[in-house]
Image (cartoon, rainbow, N blue to C red):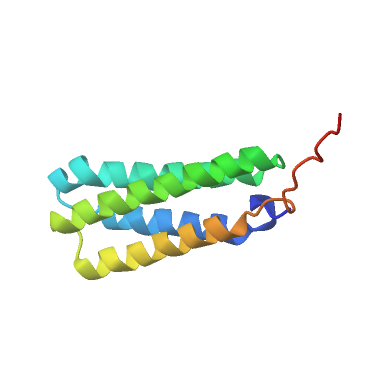
Length: 127
């Protein structure tokens, strides 16, 4: 079974993304930081925490739930990133670069965790 515990790279990339987001938001004006930046940073921080917790799990259903939660955090971060771009707190170029990173993480999370094997239905009982 493929799970987070085999891939430190996803976790490392999420940590790096968190640092980039933090270093960007810290430069914003007060209202941008307060209204949107805080929510963006929290979404990315939750993403990192979920990946960190899932790396320690060997239970496939728990890993699957973690993957879904991580993907939700990515969607939330993308939403707040778009809001920041519309509010001119972040440049279009920087927003696009961060979106590319978010999409890459989303793709890797979506394809990285696969079911342990083909799902088969139990044989029908004959009466």
